[in-house]
Length: 392
Image (cartoon, rainbow, N blue to C red; front, side):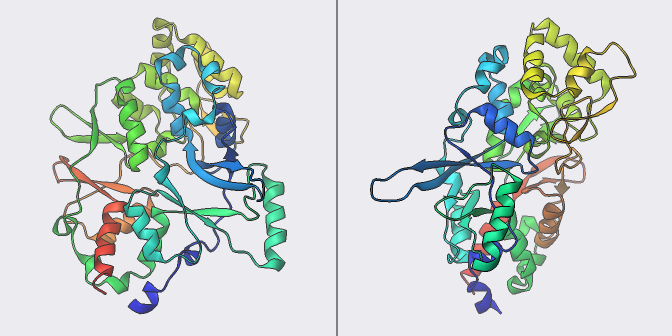
């Protein structure tokens, strides 16, 4: 069984994966924003295509962008004052500078190669989709008709594999690794104490750098009280379900209030009023108006401008077909803003199942008194599995 497992290649993990939606490096931030708001996908791939004299056009995925990239970019002081100008900038301004986050890989590459690349820092492995001549062509045409952002590159379509895909695959063959899955996190030594954290009462704007870093690390930002007790988190996953108008909340609220604001139930009305008042104090009302015009998003603007208490909580349908409740919340695969936690004595397999069930790449590790021990990530787990494979 171990031999057959080691013989697996990445094409086995690509079965049923949809083709990537993509943008050109020539696109603008506004283009990326429009695609993200009208897509069910959290990330959009960015491609660079070059013409060669004696060769066909060669394209390569050079990175990925998500709503959190746009939000953090718009939170910069100059961009708060002129969001329309910021959105007209090339997509390269929000593209992560670390090119190793996205790596191309052939379908025939081994599972071990994929794990090694992830452990070296890759977040997404871009793999050509293998299709049969009979079914692949018609399926490709259907996808192209469905969305103009799904492109064929170098004569074929691509999908990408993530850490979650690999962990999910390993979970399906977990018996190969016995007794490893039953061991506790602390006994395996995979709890990292190097976490991103912010005080509950600190300005949310002071957490923007940490939010951006957590996106790169595929983790989150812990919110702690003055005693170091774990209160919750500002998760890129949850923040990514918002639209660009959440920048107004980041610019005006505390970290603790922002945590409540981005909850998938929509922000409390008292926080909406606080944001409105503080925008006036900071002379940033124009910012919200520009966002509303550029995105054709009516829900948050209506909540801020309405003088009727009955209008604020009304559910309205945004242009992209998502419901929102007087907020920048969208219904795109989100979870409750509550942080997902485990205990140092939790078993590896229990934590794997918990993370996959909640669609997160990490779990906070806390003691019974809610004091924060650290964080355990998919990368930590993969390192243990990789070391075990060397002994097989």
